[in-house]
Length: 145
Image (cartoon, rainbow, N blue to C red; front, side, top):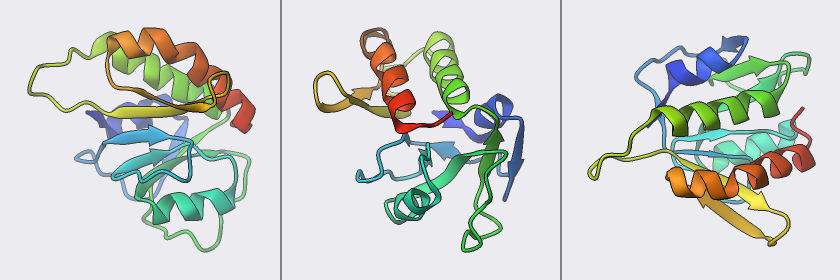
């Protein structure tokens, strides 16, 4: 599974608890889905509140954007100049460098496929190869830069 340290390495900084034992079951920019142990890809601060309500335990955040006053100090934020670049870098790294064992649990990446009008789930190499471009388009449309 995708771990705190891997995400921190993709970001230029971090804020909140620094827990190297933290692993993410899901990575998504979709606010309306349940995301247990989720790493959220934000498009606005108000969406972050809803993402936390749905199970997000950490989030990316643009370095130049003000952090909401309501956000707990311990909540992990991974700071970056370009969220899209950081997320796609993690997605690429994760699927090029992780070999799924039959018994291993993989982090799920969920993106909206605008062309097909539905959510796409990436959980393995084949899905990664099939939906990677859709993930990039989805992030750009959400305005994550």
